Length: 240
Image (cartoon, rainbow, N blue to C red; front, side, top):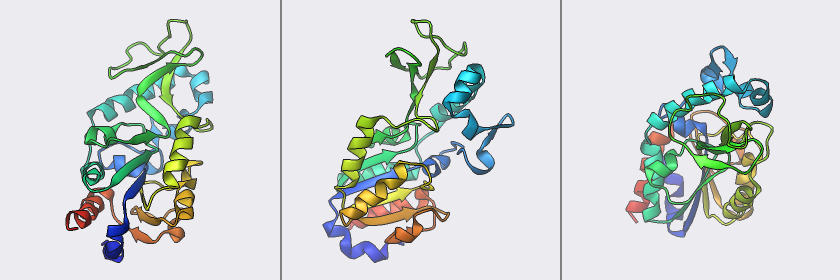
């Protein structure tokens, strides 16, 4: 599966993973796209916007309560655990578009959440933030300042936190190998991260059952799931 890069293993010291919804789907977390993209006949991609939140915060919070319950019950799969295990052999950074915290649950120590975290909530007006792992019983919840609380996630049309994005660009431009896992690479600006890696002459590996926007730019393509592929990738380092 990874025979083409066996000879490069000794030169790989820094690995950056760019992960998307596909890796979490293997833990039972639905994606926004395809058959999983509907909730109560609502388009999930349209619910994940600031406009939807202000138009109907109760509806958006009901959806997020269901998402939170599903995510909190989910467990890391072999793909998540393999990424964490790889830290025994090389420096590993995870740049994830996911908001579920499964990389941290699996034991990865350096995870940048590009799109925020569903575990956190914040005020839509003031600076209040906190972590919550319980169901929000009264929706929409209100901040002590009287304004509506929202999930601390990046919705479609919103900018990424600039401190996180700046750090992600630097890390991507310093790696020896970038592995893009379970993301279609259609969401900007995260889809530019492989370009920064390529500028450093890093190897690019794509692990995805489906073709993506940047498949033609990859040095190696694995048309399989991360749960199957990544444990096999880690064995390359165990043998060295």
